Length: 504
Image (cartoon, rainbow, N blue to C red):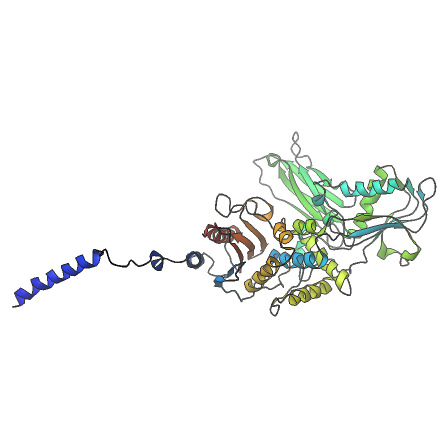
């Protein structure tokens, strides 16, 4: 009996297999999409897989991805946790400045005198620059020409017939407080351009570019060091010498704290060719007055007095007793925020934050500016409960934000009438700013408008991208406390941006 049952079972199984694999013409096929992930699910799966295998075990990732038009969130990881944002902080500062001050806002700086201009063009008194907090007196706004803004000042004076100034050149920075560095900034950043001092009267972003050129003929000779702008303001010691390519080299530069004594020293290989280094200056107000005096004299307008900081005067200035010569207006705010976000410029961001304090608060301080920012975010319904802002640029390690909050900011700006100004101020992948060399050759190239952020053990990328069908997506990607090289973290961020850009 058993011998007969076994062949029967085999025949039945084979019959069932044939039946199951042969579709009846009257059968209803199951839709293919029931066996596939949606575009959002696939993107989330790929992001999860990427981060699960990322070589950042000692660090933290925070990510949030959300459709801009519907508000649908389709990926989150540690989105409510707090992270140091680094220069993602600038997104908050520029959003508040744009929305509160408006895209056409311009700084107005008055040039006045406490004397009079006689018929021969002689100012029998001082030339006073009443600082407005304008951050735009630099090559960045004038086609990379360091002297253009000073030439504009001199041309305005000449239009008034000025040929000589019998008094001093006085710089007044009192529109801002005297706190020249951001909250929690590291002391060893002070020499470098990204840690430049903040002042109500500033020129060339308060640093000097130095072009280094090795001696092409004689080894052992000093390297040629040329300042831009051309000025004698810095007391520079040059102990940097030209050496051959087979020499072990080490060279450094620095500035003594609280002074304008700086130096270059060490061995510089001839084969290195020309390079550039920057050193910040001390006392931006005096620096501005000093360079203006130099440029005036070069233009044939003699100045009998000296450059002065208003704080060094024995008495305060009484502007009711002065005569205005001219007013100089800055570039519009729409241009200024682009010069913050695209190159990630710290100095301008800090100036904007203090400007908010001047225009809407009680004083031109970072503290007052932050207070205005928080009131602005709160007024538009953003959850600010865990938002901790301590400066305007993100250089401070005391700033804390979450991916949730940053996407909330992006959402706020997406719905704002000034959306276009804001989005266009952000770097464009593969083309402009701090992402100009990133995502090249992928679907994300020239498709991502995002702000970067980098300080030690911190890397962020937040902004907007668009799917293949043109659907806008907002995202925030933050990494803290990683110990691998930063470029590897950026590579993971770029892959996430590309996953989003590849979506249908």
